[in-house]
Length: 163
Image 1 (cartoon, rainbow, N blue to C red):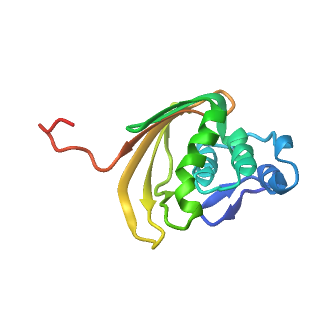
Image 2 (cartoon, one colour):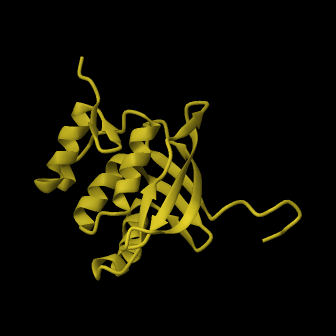
């Protein structure tokens, strides 16, 4: 049996590694599924740093359900293709070297095999944290792909303070 492979903080199984490596050659042929919630979130997180639209789409084909929903205080995005475009808009500032990046900042906490949460932070081009903590919760579909992410920016408000 094959063992997982680690690339930085990303831990993936060899079959998925081969599929992700194939992004350079044939993004449309990528058909692997994430091995677990951590892998789905790590791939999803990497999509937030991928400026090449075809590669970003191929990553999300593995990690994100076709009809998945992403929402945060500034956006509501319905469907994989819409998320590819939304992330592209976020990355527009980064392509000029002056935009922030998103980094997964925790392991994934999962219960009942499908509900999850994780922390992230936004880092500026100088490497300094711009926004932290960020927290997302979500849900996996039957194939282990993310089908819902609900994002929150910054720390929880103090008790008695309303947004």
